[in-house]
Every structure is written in structure tokens, then in C-alpha cells.
Image (tube, rainbow, N blue to C red; front, side, top):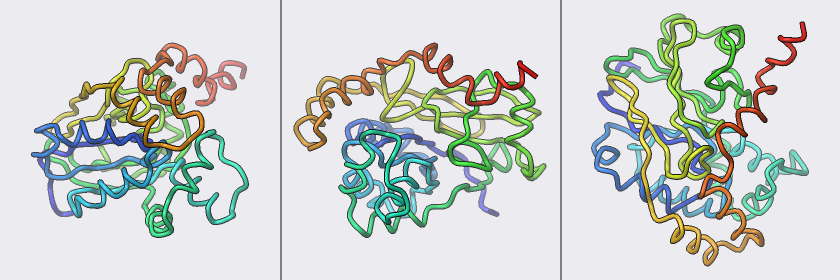
Length: 258
């Protein structure tokens, strides 16, 4: 924790989409960053083993945080659950090598780093206390107070993923950053990520989406891979639709009723 980083590239929700990850890793500012920080849901998609192998080949340049989808794959493989909410999940779980399952099982749920201009930054997947809670750009102040409960007062910035939509906002004096999704973006296509330090700079990397969809269809044995690639790589789900569908998951309806 004593080391202070100048620039970090934050990548979230890669979801096993190797062409999107390769495009982001080729960005000059990602190459030049002090470290690459992953904020979970790394593997749950069409090329999980290939994505893990590429990231692990970068050694200590990569700092890892696990997500709910990574955890679900481990639990499924180890017989701790009999189903996965994501339809592609069982295929992905069986595609992973045993050493990769062990690696995912050991990933931390949070990571705290010092970043120049931002001080102490906590990285998590969904919220600091849970890997599948939902908070959105328009979540109520009361909701942010809930998910920040127990957080050390000197944490001035929280970086999360999970909802696949990029945003930067203030909540109770803390900067909240969601870099969006590399492999399964909602709202607009492209591989979304963030450059952190001394501020928070949301980025999107354009890449050959039709070519990537064709590559996934050719290289992945998942029976519905063509439909999967078309829907997620082209970001067929709009941000408006997703916010409307997921809004109740942050408790707003219960609050409004009460």
C-alpha cells in the first residue's frame, strides 16, 4: 500500500472476449500504464481460457479482483451449485482447466491502491461489500450510504464494474468510477475501460466487431455463439433499457413505496 501509482489502466467485465481484450491491451496508454487492474467477471464468455492465459502471461503488471461470474464458475465446477444464471456459464465452467479454476478461486474481492491525485482507491467488482449488488449512475444517496457502510474513511475513490455501463459520479464525497465493460457493453459498442490517475478518464477502444464476431463463431464451440456475439459485441441492449430493468435491483422501488 505504500507504493503510489501514477497511471492505472482499469479493465472490467471482459467476459471472455479475447478480440476486445487484445484491442485494449494494444492501446499505447495501456502499455504505458504502471499496472493493469482488473475488476472482475474476467472469464464468463466465449474464450475464457485464452483470456486468462493472455492476462497471466503479463505477470505482475496485472492486478486482479474477482467478480460474481468468476465465483459462480468456480462454484459450479466444484459442485457447490447446480446452475449458473448466465446461459453460457455451464459451457464456460467446463472449458476452464483445473489450474484456471484454482486461480479464479483465489482472487480477492477487493484491492486497495494509492493513486497519485486520488489517494487511496478501493477496487471491487460490484460494491465494496458484495460482488453482485447493483448500484447505478442514478442510484439514490441512501443506497450509496448502504454500500459504503464499513468503508474506511480515508478511501476517497471507489472503482467498480458489474453493470457494464461507464460512469463517473460523486457519492457522499467519494468519487465512484465504473469503467464499463470490455466484452459485453451496454449502451454503445466498443471495448470500454478507464485510465485512472490523477483523475478518471473513461475510454472506449473501437475494434473490428464483425471480424471479432466471426472469429468467436469459428473458434468457440458454444452452440449459440453466433447469437451471443451478435447481441453483446454490438451492444444491442441500450443503456436506457438496462437502467429501467436493473433500477429496482438497487432497492429504489421499496424505498419509494415506504
